Image (cartoon, rainbow, N blue to C red; front, top):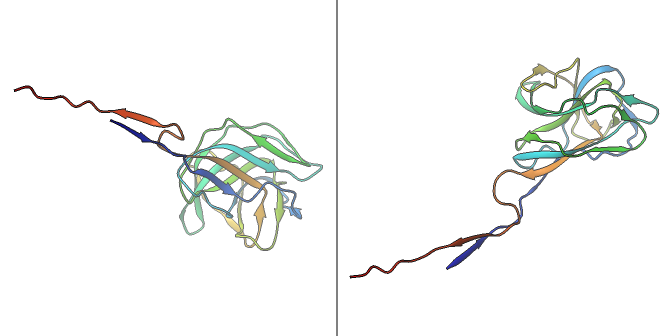
Length: 178
């Protein structure tokens, strides 16, 4: 007897799309978290997309996933090492990442300047704090810009299972001899 199990794992996404938006957050050395589109499943983020304002380069760009501790305090669950310099003017994509994500997490970034493309109306908001708070387990209180969105987006795959590959189970039944 054979039983086939399988199916696809859910695609995970987190963050607003990495597109050219109306403005940018200005400032130096900020950790910024986008509150749009929290992670829809638990698993791994393997791709991050970002759009930096034309004419700027973020050096030491890092991406991370954050969760609410309480009030305005958020903690970093997982993060990348520096992904290098991100040159503005187009969507930049980083693949081959392995960021742990849990349902409800938010995506954020850190860099030497805060010039990721941003909208200021019609969105869930962004959180920001001066300084680098993107190491795993870093926790701090953030200020809020209500209605804003940043162009930072992550995708990956839900945890568990064997993906879309079928699993074959063979059962053998022995006849008891009398």
